[in-house]
Image 1 (cartoon, rainbow, N blue to C red):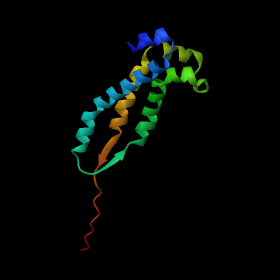
Image 2 (image 1 turned 30 degrees about the vertical axis):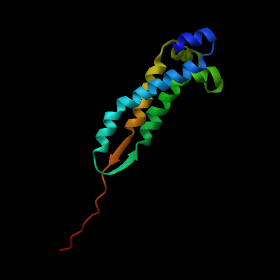
Image 3 (image 1 turned 120 degrees about the vertical axis):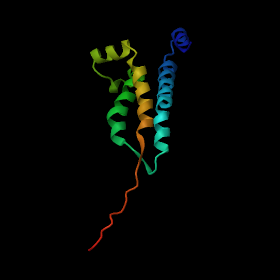
Image 4 (image 1 turned 45 degrees about the vertical axis):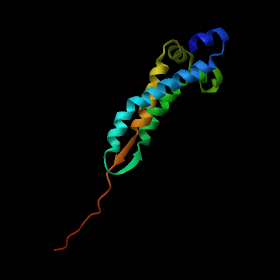
Length: 120
């Protein structure tokens, strides 16, 4: 329905923002069982920054690529890559991956035990 409204009004910005946002939320829901499993562990929470940087950032870039193409042309990729990204709907999958990575990057690390030395 949103796609039809965008086609009628020629205002595609709402479509290219809300649809990836929906897939990000679905990805978050898909990652919730992992987060609940981590919550049952003991330890302190940590964040896997490298997972977010190396998987999450490219995924959010691809997910928001139609918006980048429409509004921020300086961040565009070469034409042949842009054509592939815009002709397929891979940006939906990338939004799903980003939502999942966002949740699964949280983990609990066990508390470090102090070393006990015994002098004999």
